[in-house]
Length: 366
Length: 89
Image: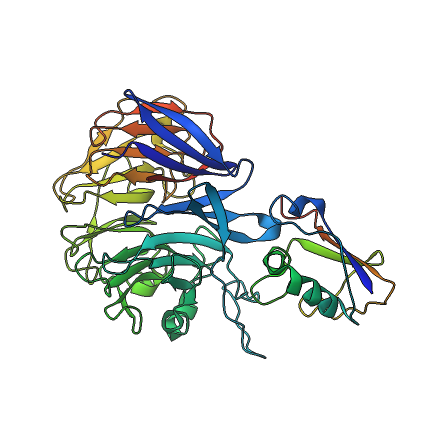
């Protein structure tokens, strides 16, 4: 069981601890600053925090015995002289880290290895606890990468990184928009996966093109890595072959739209989602905040709302703001309107920690 | 030598005391300053060494024009102000 949460918000990083059955805010770091994501490495206990200072750019910090220290943020290589690249709007695509959108640890046999996904689409790897970063040029230079497009943001980005627990050279990443990409050799070669996903925002002849898929979040089961779940812009999809092929799960109430997905570490058929009215409104249906859970691989879903606000709740839970602890029993969600809820029974019931945080971008057990 | 003054708002993130450096362009002066304060560089310039989108630089009260190459000329008596733009929130 994890008793500690790191909550990344628009105005600081909040530490929430379980004390005698209650969850309380016990500390805040970077107060006033935009903290977009954290990662805590279970191999050595180090935490990483991504900040976006707006004017001053994207920064990375690493925990120390006495607080935090700034370490280099992933940086794009120099753009070749005379090279021009436009984004989907016809504007110059800047080779510069616009956002840190994914952080993941390497495999058990790779101490110090951290993966980092960014906007506008660069994937980075560090083998020294974030002290230096190398861009994975094989993915950035892949000809199909130029077909990635902005989804919720103007720029495309990598928001999900899944390192296969059986073989850390097998890495899958989710792109919005750009589908699911997979390497089996630690990043030297990449293949576009994701057959079976469907994009209803594309012309019919392109609806099933894997490159067009707006994957909102990709999750891999730790004990059964062949099982992957996708919360997609217009649906929920499940794979039983490491993302090669997906099956659409239709008719999920109250909605198949949402941002996050979490899968139980030992039960590949158990996954959680946070539904919203799709996609032009992006609010809970009827103002009732809920989490949905399947325990049978998507055949059926339960709507879990005990303890969540059921009147005039307009909380949106972003893709990194649904957290599941290591044993798979405790969940937490944080919302755009500053709510934070914890469940200690796999979502059956929820307790409000606070509803007065700044907008929450990410929640992680740490 | 040109004088370089940084916005006070950056100081809580990284110390950027006023500095003096010689150079014929904004780029030449700033690179000398950043050579002594490398952490400050990424707060002002992006990954391609262009001025960050929501930063501004004034040379003797005039906003620079070349935000990519920072080729605007600098005199020995110039004062360079590195400020935040009002855009960017």
